[in-house]
Amino acid sequence: MTLLFHTTLILYLSLYQQLTRRLYHKINPNRKVESMNKKILVLEKNRDILELINIVLTEKGYIVDLLATEDEVFNHIRDFQPDIILLDIINPTEEGTALCKTIKAAEQTSHIPVIVLSTHPKVEIVKEICADEVVPKPFNISFLIQTIEQQLINV
Image (cartoon, rainbow, N blue to C red; front, top):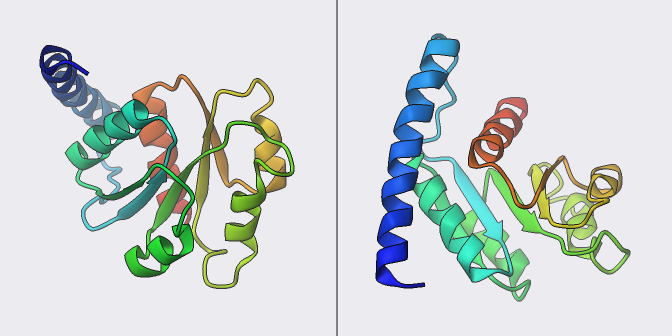
């Protein structure tokens, strides 16, 4: 990414978040999700999307751990102890959902909400298989944040 594009993206996200916060507090003045100290592990294969998610979540006050591959994911989960996991699944096949199913089946990680991000047209199938929630790509940033906050409330 060029520096100009990156700078423009950061400025746009800051403005967007300020406007979203104002609107959110007007609509829900008494509801607040405390994002401080909440940890989110993000496993996303696309580095640009990974960087965008990092910017957005960090701006919101979350502590973020980023992974671009599944290598050592359980070591990251053990060491980082996330409150929620964002997981990129390209195809909701047996192989594509294997990591999600393993996370939800393991005693040490089954309690952690998993939000699946995917471009697949039948991504909702993943919710039936293993995910707590699904966010189709391309995603609306507000919807992603709202989904994360809802899962944190439900924990």
